[in-house]
Amino acid sequence: QMKDELPSDADRPLDINVQDRVHVVFSGTTIINAQDSPESGRLPNIPKTPQGGCLAYVLRTGFNSSQGELLQMIEYSVDKVSADSKEVALCLLILLGFAICSASYVLVKGLEKGDRTADQLLLKCVIILSAVVPRELPMQMAMAVNTALMALMKVGVFCTEPFRVPLAGKLSHCLFDKTGTLTTDTLIPCGIVGHNTEKKAPEREPVVKASPEATMVLVGCHSLVDVKDVGIVGDPIELAAVKGVDWRYEGAKATAYAGNFEPHEKALQQLKDELSKIDVNDPNKDTKKKEKNAAIEKVENEFKAAKAKAAKAQLASVHILQRFHFASKLQRMSAVAQVESRGGSIKNGRYSLVKGSPEIIKTLVKPSALPSWYEDC
Image 1: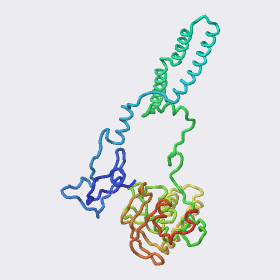
Image 2: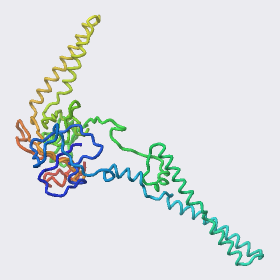
Image 3: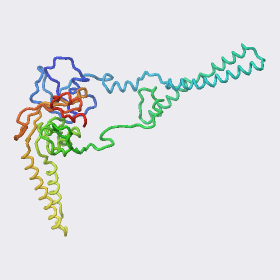
Image 4: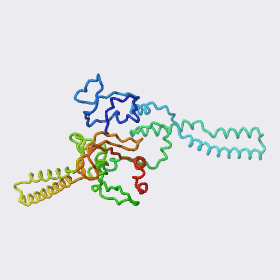
């Protein structure tokens, strides 16, 4: 996730939960890349950081931090260890039913025999009813929960709310949704639906055939960053979108260019390395060299065709000037970009690009420009 510096002209209280969350780095975060913005204004009387690092101000430490609150909840939980009150009440109702039956039987049979007075029979019935709740029941319920807690701690599971253990015992399935754990983080875009003024939604077409307007949003409105010795990293969906329209993004310049030549360059380098490693004593060396040279020639032709196609693209480049990161409350992300066009419907200039949930985008589009099929998709 990308973080931005705090504006130096912000004359308001710091809101670390909503408005200024994009400026806050939480404990446990690993910073993989940091860049100093040349356009940013530096606060007066604050020296530069050593080695060009980022200047940070500690907001919360110890038990006041998010991790500290969790540890405090685990270590010093004040919740009473007991069983579920509903289950206990149900158990007591069952015991009460048996006790009423027993007391009724004693009362009826005692009156039929007549060998005891009514006061003695009532006293016996009261004793039976009062004995329905054993004195050991609360302790037994607490011990059952404690036994479950100790069993969980032995396997490294900490329970912050012990009173929920009986409820957890009723579960038969646990489902976890975490992209990258059970699935791969490499996504393949299957297509894009463009804009038209017809009543029927257009058919889905390959992403590489996206309109210039859609391409401009896909390659200019994202949170991708360039990490040294790693390459472009970020949201897998945004990575797939940029590659899907056959563009490339250079993080150092914050600019996207038409044409994705990285696969061709890697394939050429790999073929050349394999060609140089052919053993001179191999009896089939001539055949192998011929095959490798033919493969290299094929990739070079594809490389030239890709460059020619990129040179004919309507958009030449999209330079990101300012990002406004995704906010869950707003359900959208936006960016201001400088677009270089080679003609057509898109002119050179600065554009405001936005993407988000369909219901939010609908509120930003003019009613006259909204397709009639928008809500049906």
